[in-house]
Amino acid sequence: MATTKPASQPDAQSFNDKVIAIQSELKAPKSQYNSFGKYAYRNAEDILEAVKPLLKKYGLSMTISDSIEEVCGIVYVDANVYLTDGTDSVTVGAQAGIDPNRKGMDIAQCFGASSSYARKYALNGMFLIDDTKDADSTNTHGKDVQTTKAVPSAPAQDTFQQAIDFLKSSSDKGKAYDAIIAKYGSGFSDAQVNALKKFV
Image (tube, rainbow, N blue to C red; front, side):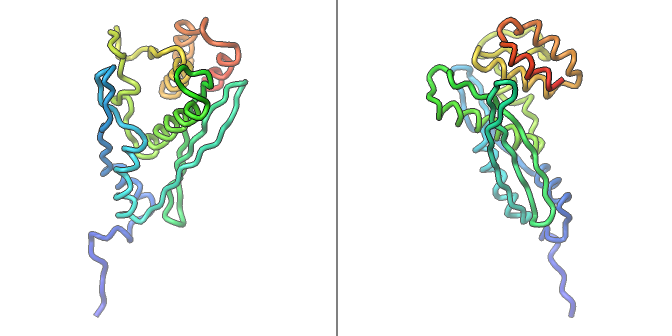
């Protein structure tokens, strides 16, 4: 008598179907809380904790790698999330600038913070997590905002990275670049301005 696999087993699904299923089923709660800004947020560890059972369920493996790159004198972490079933695969990357002079952090902490930031956004891209609703892009640390679609405000050491993120997420990159330069241009070095132009 012929036997068939129970419908609950996902082995017969294609790699693409499994990725879609994980993207649909993944729920990454905002389990962290910033007492200063009074908002909840998720970090890379929250996403990893939520996705591990789904990877096991659908028989996929995932790795994350970092590399240190430099563009026009700007050093940044390039993080890549690699998802595979052993045959097919998909990779999503994200970048985060490194400020070795960040107040209150030593050099290792600066690199670590940028790595965590880049990994989180690579995971967001892989699993279609809409970060426009996450604290990193919506909190104003107690400051009022005039519009929900504006160049993000940020502490001085984070402004350049926020500008990159804003450019990458904008549909009209030329207009976004002009808005960034108008608001923050005087605070950017020539190297930073040239680096921003690469995203336009």
